[in-house]
Length: 114
Image (cartoon, rainbow, N blue to C red; front, side):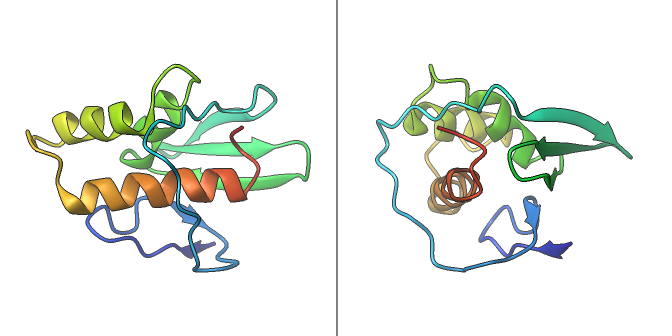
């Protein structure tokens, strides 16, 4: 697996890199993890398995909260706020904002969310 380079939360989302161009996602979008995605813990990292294409994606402790918050009820804006609080950033930090957008865009591109 190759590490995806992100600003701020660098290296917290791992995948086989296909394309570095990220899709822009509206802050009101409510990402929802697809129900058929299986989540397992392997060596303290969360592993997502997509049975649709048999792909495996490894999330560490920082990207996993983004995945958990992608439940269809939270907007991107709320996810950014929650991640900022988690990392003791009371204001929206530009890097966190960009990183959450990038992670959600990757989840979407990989077919992990709807």
